[in-house]
Length: 473
Image 1 (spheres, rainbow, N blue to C red):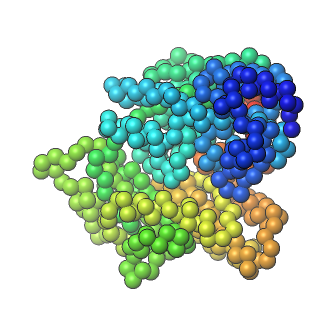
Image 2 (cartoon, rainbow, N blue to C red):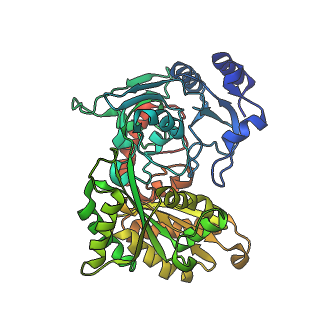
């Protein structure tokens, strides 16, 4: 716990509305999205960059530990306090007033507390969107801190690709404000400092404002479920889709039978679209899109997709066992329900992995063979972004078969899966969730010492105070 003097001083900076002290009020900021519980000394809720600077400066001078929190939708304990009760949570949830749209530049200056859904709702009348698509509804500051990818990475890239500028408060005794806001897409005049603060989990500074690249809102969309002949046919199918559809291809998402079954069981209103209601072992959700309204005489997008699939079906080495085009809202409804469905299937141990594209299914097939011999009563409920090499590799523990589930079993699963993913397949243990307390040990284990030394030096240079839940050194 921290001294009452500190609480009074921070309340003086922010006013009573800007400080949460009571246990009930602090609970939403202490509890994460998945099995994540901590205790905060208090919660700060500043509403502009100047207030954040003042709070950070005070905490650094007094030696207080700060954890910045955006939407609190993270899954690796990166934005919640630990169990000590000594950390101060600095929430961005009141950082929402700025919304400065530049239609000509196709860019948006926005506060870091803005929610993704609110941003896109306000952009829709202008025919624009921020194109990083997620099942959750995070705030933009957290998306920058973790460099979120999303379901349409294949077409638009990640948050890093779509960030033009940032404003950051450093954790030093002055609470220094670094203004790197810019609407320029080309500026080759030296180090691109904004990227230091994207994807580094808030360790080097707190992003308070940003300028985002926007894209044209898709006006035509066509989706299909594709059933590959086997795991080895998935990459051939992806290559053939890219050859025939080019930049139209905006998503290529993999979904396992277990994940689909969990979603259908959790949300009975979802329609089972498969023949005889038999869910295939693996299904691809493919999407193509155009950003303009249909023109007279132009081939419908459904027809474009159907023609491409017909060519693939008739080609030598045909990779498809089945395929059908369907309503985009229904197909995406199933995809976006997978995470919630899996979470209700049992005790979940979730991994956010990435590989070279061809290794996603190779890793999956290897795990299907090897997992039962290592861990009885554990099942795979995977899905993810096959088109960019990402996979949400979810393991669900059958507690009735394994007995009481304790932390040791979860730790053994994590150690084993990460060793296979990184050491055997050359993958990453964190594709887009970032580094939090849950991933700290694997960062320490798998990161080269020189990289850790460089990161530690940058931390000392930018934010020497006690900021964030990650130790990069």
